[in-house]
Image 1 (cartoon, one colour):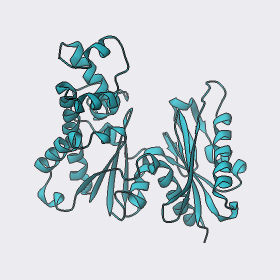
Image 2 (cartoon, helix red, strand yellow):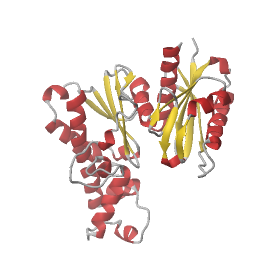
Image 3 (cartoon, helix red, strand yellow):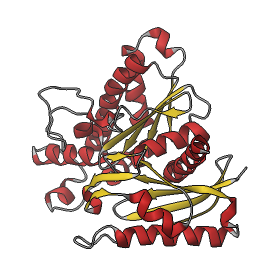
Length: 324
């Protein structure tokens, strides 16, 4: 039985990769710039992925014959069965047959999965939710991504559009989301939404140690807001706590629908710790059925920045065996 796989986490800025064992441990990992250039097509980026795979194999000191294949976690929407990425604005891709393009360059099987799905699979396979029966994962970044793993299998939906958990609507007449709908949790509780809400409060006259920076047009992101909260800025703390409450309300709906035993939160915003988790858990504990709470754990990611590469590698093992 082949003992290794390569997991690739494809982003608009960086391509991260890892050479991973069957127990989920990472032998070597590396990151390269994606270097997207509009109008050049997908070939340059696919070539960089192939180069990264070759570097990982060389630096790991292993033979290609030991690998089951490569799995790429890509932004979507996509067709995981055929390995086609339908559209990803950050890469300027449309209807790209990623598996067919990459496989001859790396000379091994190539699988493609949604990037949030692979991170969820990684946490269930080898991270915070290891061995859970039903895992729901939220990724808190520019948007709010999601993944669901049930009995060790990803829930992709009928045509790979499932688990868009960031578009759970918590206020039908609420904020406009990037998807075009109103009131999605992504419009309130992503890292970028936190920064927008903070800016709105300051512009409306609220006091904050970040006021001058915001009014001067500086990039005040979620980390900077957290740092200000730690330093005693009341508004920053209130904004993070409100984010936690809003996430908690969304999680209650996921729990009521899926009855999971584990919910994992992933992304830099999770570093806010108790400031985020205490109000989140208060909402969950108040609003969920008591029977659901008996089995439920709500945890920060254990794999953190490696969740994508570990999960992609885990899915390479799983999918290679499915077709063997």
